[in-house]
Length: 120
Image 1 (cartoon, rainbow, N blue to C red):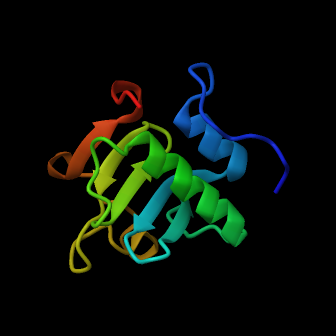
Image 2: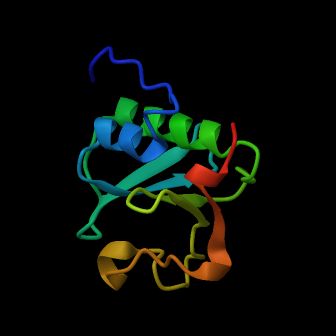
């Protein structure tokens, strides 16, 4: 990972910051364990193998951006193309295992907020 500063500025949105870390990222899934466990998925629904420091930085960016609206005791999915945050589907629901279901399970009732609507 480079020494680039990934802090967000108005001209540099959350999705672009995530793409700077993991160019093929389509979904960042953050589980509430301590320390947080993060999975980054590509648009083909398969998990990307990235360095742990990339996962940690992506987690920090998403949590920091949505700090005022998300309950981080629960798992969340940040959909990179739309900039929207969703609650992660439950293990028995479609979308929990994207590579099996070929979906991220982004349902309206799981929607939390959009990156552009959240003021940090």
